[in-house]
Amino acid sequence: MAESILNGRRVLLIVGGGIAAYKCLELIRRLKERGASVRAILTEAAQQFVTPLSVSSLTGDKVYTDLFSLTDEAEMGHIELSRDADLLVVAPATADLMAKMANGLANDLASTALLATDKKVLIAPAMNVRMWTQPATQRNFETLMADGVGFVGPNEGDMACGEYGPGRMAEPAEILAAIESHFNELAYPGGGPLKGKRVLVTSGPTHEPIDPVRYLANRSSGKQGYAIAQAVARLGAETILVSGPTNLPNPPGVTVKRVETAREMLAACESALPADIAICAAAVADWRVASDAEQKLKKTPGEQAPALTLVENPDILATLSQMKEKRPSLVVGFAAETEKVVEHATSKRQRKGCDWIVANDVSPATGVMGGDLNTVHLITREGQEDWPLLPKQAVAERLARRIAEHFSNARAAE
Ligand code: C5P
Image 1 (cartoon, helix red, strand yellow):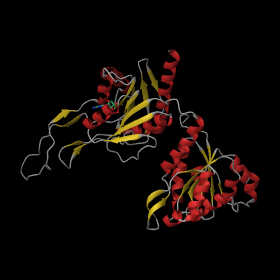
Image 2 (cartoon, helix red, strand yellow):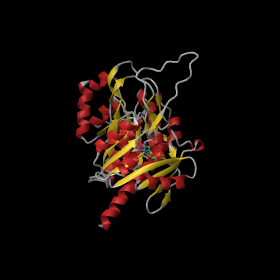
Image 3 (spheres, protein in one colour):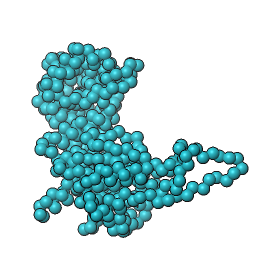
Image 4 (cartoon, helix red, strand yellow):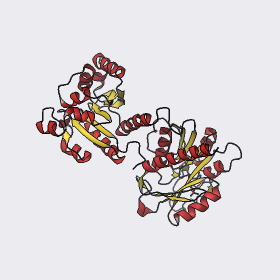
């Protein structure tokens, strides 16, 4: 877990009373997964939407609700709560909480903790569209921005009240990204160690058409590649993610080019060059149908099933690795193997001509394919590093740091 920028950070999460309060549970889980410690304050209204017991089970701490609780004040006073945090996050931030913050009111534990802090405050507003567009709320928004409060959202979309417009709380993943980028800016005030580097990442499966409605595909979710794109972008790299079809949102700060087939993926990669680093995490289909049908193939009773003739797809990793001009100076491939993982990956590195291979065991029992965890071995020209079982996010962060280290060692050797 030491790889996450959130590891060891203390977040004070203030939950306001809105229907979006349930999303704070997911946010707490994600923060904890990355090694952050979370203390939570629930306003009185928030307790109508999410129970202190659920929140406390996830934070692993008691939940703070009452300004005038003698026991709380004896154990952890409201000033102490603010002082003891590296960052305050308000999610959901209701119109009422925003109004209190903008005017310096302090008449409950949440508003008192917010007034008592000298730490960065990040808020995720959530309210009905007319409440959000009301001049009073917009005035408060301007005031809070001028006071240096950070905002994530609100997003535009369908609302629980049946209306449509701006006012939806940002998703937990977006709030998490905003929290990470806050700590990232603190850690790298002048830009990260990959600043000035251009990184190309491929991710996801490819879809190879059989006819206009059918295609060949694989089980890749794209999670690992997306996490890598986000991790290198956080370290300051200009990042281009060429993605096959996935259900994942675009990672913040990354330019995303979405493609369907292997040939489109190769073309998108070539047009993204020159790049300093290429990381090929996509599960590119090895074969495509020789000539995909223009019309939907029809099933005729009594006739034999059509035979599909397959031809080989271009190998994007090998193409990038073997380029004469424009070869990225570091090319990293992935090798998903189901047996003899390191042995197969080592020969794959040589065969394809890439510099590093990240090898992983994807046999069904591991649950890696489509799952959240991964055990990898990094194979370089110098040898092999075995990494422990890590969330894909942590694999991505470790790989990004390893790449940054590689370039800083290369600079030192010059
Ligand atoms: O040969 P294999 O598919 O096992 O190699 C995996 C590595 O090669 C991955 O990095 C994958 O992104 C890359 N690859 C590619 N184009 C292909 C096949 C694989 O870039 N057509």
